[in-house]
Length: 561
Image (cartoon, rainbow, N blue to C red; front, side, top):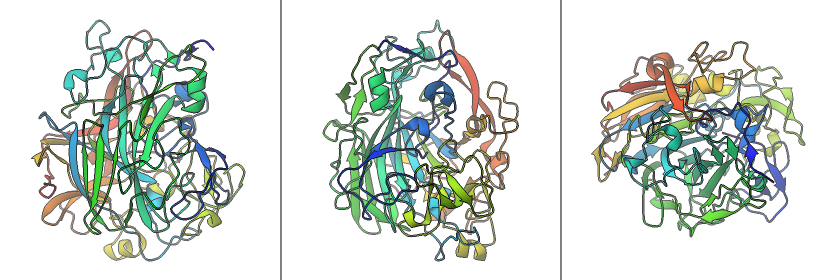
């Protein structure tokens, strides 16, 4: 077929970052950390091949800025991502990060179907992750526009001007991708359709998102590539014990989401980890050292591990992938080191992925749509992507991951007083998980980041037609924090672990807290941020985020050397 022209609405850049989704599945050989995997929401465990579709909202996908323009009318994709950003103008800060973190623990009592029990991590976040911009010459914003090739590890890739006549106009930006080093909680519906790798252990994956769009010309890739890889294609590989992918990370390989218990790297709740993310000749590499169990998992975005770019060729009748090592895009980290098609403004960052759990007592096993609400909620339209209690690996409750759209009325478990630090210490200990704890990163043998920022993409996800008064991202009108209907929205505070300052996520009352940054999400995340995006006929400006830049680093990391 000829080139696919994106409808006139597609004038802007595209993505936010990470969320859960629909799957097309067919039987294949078994592979799972906890036995068989659930084929799709509401279907009993079975081995499978999973076909990825970011348009249906997946936890490993980067959210596009205008979902309906990219994926088609009716495809709202919303990933709620409160984030901490880290800035430094020194070389290495954009391509070499070392964090320390502690995986959160769930309370001893389990959640109950009526919502009266405790809250576990799989209800608050299907994933949390650490991010970095990557090079991909086949990806947006201009793979068919003759844009300059991406030079890895270089700030020569900064093209943020809004003037089309400028040599650094944002539409001329080298091709870009976004890496998310993701961690997935245990205890509920199993991968790949669910959000748990195991009944009791965490897993992690190296995930790189790219976008097959040319924003200057309004072109998508050919139908064969859209059908096999999607317009937003994802290289994906679980961290393994030996650093070799158990299935190629290639975006057209539908087996890459299946677990291999014998080889994939698993961790326990409460484990203390050291995470090092850095570039090598073979490709960007991630190492996780579990300092509690003295084990290591790793993955390299290399040709040997099956990483590949999807060739942008709108006129082709077949899809071609190009074996490719992925490398970081930038040398430093600042307000200028963006992925130009992303709703978020950053490269080096920590982000949670929240807003993806509603109670559901029963669901249709064929469609994954909730048929019996639970937990005090109504039978809303966003109760889809649902699992029955029997689908779970451990906690026998039914629930929905809110695939299309995300929890768009903001009444699910993550928008309630269910986070650590939202109640009294005794109640929180008994009924809520401990917080995710992570350090500020260091780079190149212990150098510190000089500034930080707080950011959330609430304006982006509040721009949906299901709200009575949607956010207007052109003017900023009706864009609010917390989102409409939410009892609570999580934010970041600091504490100390092993003598060093660390970040934690939840409310203001976590024991040992040293700084609450205003004590609310409104105070912490600040005001609206306007960003420029490329498009057909010239640039466009949108309010996709709230951002608050702090002109120092209030939580320096003293432990990651």
